[in-house]
Amino acid sequence: MTVLHLADDVEAADLAAFLARLLRYDRGAAVRLQATGTTLAVFGRPPSFEVLVIRAVRLAKPYENGLEDGLDVTVSAGQLLESIAESAATAVVPAAVTGPPWAGVLPPRGGWQQVPGLPAPDALRATVAEAVAEFRSRVEELAPEQRTRTALDRVGRDIWSRTVGNTGLPVRAVHAAQSLGFLRPAPRAPGDDEPPALFSSGAWLRLRTPYGSVAVRRAGLGALDVSVR
Image (tube, rainbow, N blue to C red; front, side, top):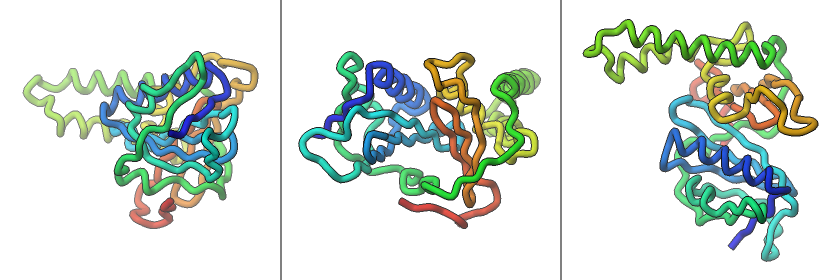
């Protein structure tokens, strides 16, 4: 049994909240865990957003039971959530599962360069609010019999595929960041007031905040520049 010792109870609570949000979008969600040293990266893919979300978790110490190698495993998000003991700041790594296709294609570890032009956090949240309002308005304009899944998906694609300014970042990535708790209006602790930033590496864009990151493949590149881990 592999036990993760998280940095503190706040870190444990944040990880639990992140997993709970993922499970709201996919009750059978899986997450890929990668740990080196005292940092655990938790990768997930909420299907509604078509992006990868990454939560970096601070560990108090690497592992129990003499495990010295880096951890890299795909597990059930629900089972991981159930194993978290917030007061003790621990979590037990569940048994590995057969990972979904996205778990084999992750953003690169290095080569990231900052992309200028990302709006301020308040403007990002306003962009999401405007997009949500437009989606609801356009759906309400449809007759009830026209509100099919195909029609709703078409409206959603039109709105969420728009880019944020000239950055190339789709609005759906910002929506995912807000929905997963990465775009918070107030800092949790000193150092959490660092503004969001946008980075690119190969075919990938990554929106980074103090609470987590959202990564998305650039459109139109097909199978090029894929980083398989």
